[in-house]
Structure formats: C-alpha cells, structure tokens
Image 1 (cartoon, rainbow, N blue to C red):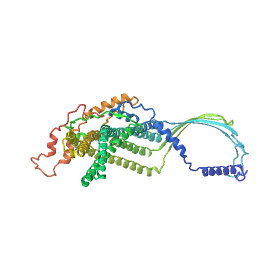
Image 2 (cartoon, one colour):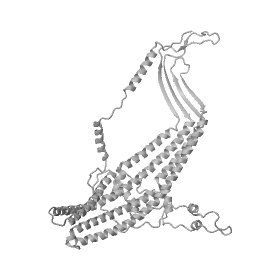
Image 3 (cartoon, rainbow, N blue to C red):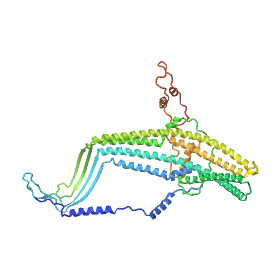
Length: 560
C-alpha cells in the first residue's frame, strides 16, 4: 500500500503562500487617488463647451412657441428624461433574454505532472487487490456544448420582464411630468422677461430722472436754499421712489437669465423677445363641471399613472414569490468531447432531468408572499393619498385662475387710470412748485401699474397652465419631430392655440351611476328619516334624477 502524498515540502505549499502574499500586497497597494485640479479644470472647459454644442443659433425675435420648442429640444432636464426612458427600453430588451434557455459552450486543455493512476483495496483483507493502473492521458483536450432550461428561473424571468415593461411605461410618464413642469417654468420666465424688455427702458428713464432730482435737492440742501424739513422730506420721498424702481429693475433683469437657462442659451446672450400681446378682456372659463375636471385629473395625471404601473409591478412581484415555491425542474442536454485515448467513445451526447426543492422555502415562501402583498397594498394606498392631493390641486388651481382673472382686471383698470393721471401731470395739470416731484412719482406709479398689469396677465396665463398641469393634460406633443426645430415650433403653436383662447380640451364624463353613488355617499340623510309608506326624497336622489349640466364637448372620453 502506497502512502498518500501531502503538501508538506511540495511545490503546492510554496505556490499557495506566494498567491496569498500577492493578494495581500495588491490589497495594500490600493489607495484613494484624487483627481488633480488641473484635470478638473480641463473637464470643466470641455463640458462648458459641450453644453451649447449642436444647437441652432437664435436669430431674430424669440416667441413663446420657439422658447418652448427650444426647451423641449435643448433643455437638459428633458434630455435626461429622454435618456432614462431609452435606458428602461434597453433594459426591457435585456430582460427578455433572461427567459431564453441557457446555452453554454466550453473548451479547455488539461495536463498533470504524473499519471492519474490508482489501485484497489480489499474491504475484507485490507490488502491491495490490483497493481496501480491508469485510464486517462496526462494531457488531453475537452469540450462540451450544453443546453439547459430551468422552469422556475423561466417563470421568475417572465414576471421580471413584465415588471421591466411597466418601468419603461413609468419612464414615459415621468417624461410627461418633466415636460409639463418645463412648460410652466418657460411660460412664467418668458412673460417676466418680455415684461422686463418692454418696461426696462421706461424704468431706466424714471430712475435717471429720480437720481437727477435727488442730486438737485442735495445741492439745495448743501447751499441752504430752501426750508430744511421740506428738503429732507423731498429727499426721503425720492429715495423711497428710487428704492422701489431699483427693486423692480432687479426683479426684471434676472428674468431673461432664467429664461436663457431653461432654453439652454449661453448666459449673457443678447436676444430680443416678441413684444407680448395682452388681451384686454380675457374670457373666463365657463361651464366647467368640477367633477369632470377631477375625473380627468385622476385619469391623466402622470403621478397617478406611475402609481398604477407600480401597482402592476408589485402584483407581478407577488407572482414571482409564488413561482419560487414550485419545485425546481432542470432540463439539460449537451454534446461532449474528450481526447482521452483510453476512452472507447470520445464523442457523446447526454440528457438529464433533475428536480430539486428547498424545504426551507415552505417557511420562507409564505412570508415573502405576504411581504409582496403588503407592498402592493402600500402602493395602492399611496395612490389613493395622491389622488386626494390631485383633486385638491385641481380645485385650488381653478380658484387661483378665477382670482388671477379678477386681479388682472383690477390691475388693468388701475393701469389705465395711472396712465391718464401721468399724462395729465405731464401736461402741466399741477402747480409749478409740485410738478417735478409729482411728475416723478406719477411716472413711477404709472410704470409700476403697467408692470403690475403685465405681471397679472402673466400670472393669469400661468394659472391657466396650472389647470392644464393639475389635470395632467399634455400642453406639448410628446411625439413631435424633435430633430427639426421649425417643425417642433409649429407643433407647439398648434398645441398652445386652445390655451391662448382660454379653452379646455375635451375631458371625459363621469359615469352617471358613479356620480349618483358619490352624491348618495356624501349627502344621504341619517338612517331612519322618512316614512316606510312614503319615503321622503333625499337630496341625493333629487341630484341623481337631475341630468348634470356640463360644458359641451366633442370627442369626450378621449385621452391626450
């Protein structure tokens, strides 16, 4: 009987010690390597240049539709939303491959330093029954091609693929939300910038006149040419006027910078805006059924659609946990090659079927299913909570629009009066001793009133856009041809036409039976009222029997 060789004194021990030492030295050699400041500066230079590359130059006057089109095409928040949507689509394509069987090919060369010899030992006499022999070459080539399919893995991959498909749809809804918010921000910045461009020259003239009058008053005070109290009061009034004018100028000058950032125009670019056209008497939204608006919001809001897709993802997660409870059935077949000269058949095919089951899954599986079901309930409850917020936002946005409309009408009337007063003062309608100060003050008041009118009109447009956003309507087409700026601009103009007219697109009707059920739920009288023979008609029944008056629409029930 031969002795079994050990690793003591053999090359294997030295090799093992050398490998451990190499790994230890490699681990100690890894240290944090900060990027040098020079490299950061080079990166910043390249990125600053890349921020505004491949953009069509801004020529002529910038209109609101072109500003929105440029925001859609060049704004990096929107680009990021597009890339995230493309990423989810790519991951969906990748997830589909996980449902395919596993096809593995391998090949290799095997060698050893001595013969793979062995002998037999009798279990009765404990004596060696055969002399050592071998049935394997010291050097050989092996290869195999194996096709395997796991039933449980296929089921899990199927539900994972369905989840990824819903994540791709969630990315689309998130892009809708980015676009809607971008539209609101661009509109608000555009109106502020247009107002600034219209009124800044007047502000500069008023500031120059006030500073000139203040300088003259200080000279009078220095030479003691007038009453001290009246002179100081006059200077105080002028400083108050100057403070107001400079604050207005500061608010207006930053508006164009904000618009430049939204449409991705280099800061400090000099471009002109199309002069804003203010509708003197905008039409109020009439004939609006609040329940229909709320129904539209619950149908179209991107956030609620995201949660609906998330609930489907959670439901697929429940089925994934159920699938993992099934026995693991493994099917495999393959072709094999071995160059061993002792083999009678160096090429062969094999087939195997194996079923395994983890008994501990009987304990873990039900808890995993329960956790997945709880996650689904959490998502559903979160969507309901968000629905309450959406309904509230719709009601608030409509009230804000009505208030903005009233505020604009008031600002319009005040601006007209201040303009007439300023014209009268300029024509010498006041005594000579009060003309200069009153003319400056009246001019400032007229400019402030005109600014307030323009700002109120901008807020009115923003309030109308808020109604669109609260409902979840797409103000701009998501499927527009974004590679062509003129075509995208035209699509934006077509989408903004109803908004400029103060119109809402067709919205779905709340089903009559659902509306009646809601009314009964919240307006039904306490139980026991009325008589058994002739029950009194409740307010809910009266409302349910009365047709609901709604604004005339065409194509009701369509989605944006």
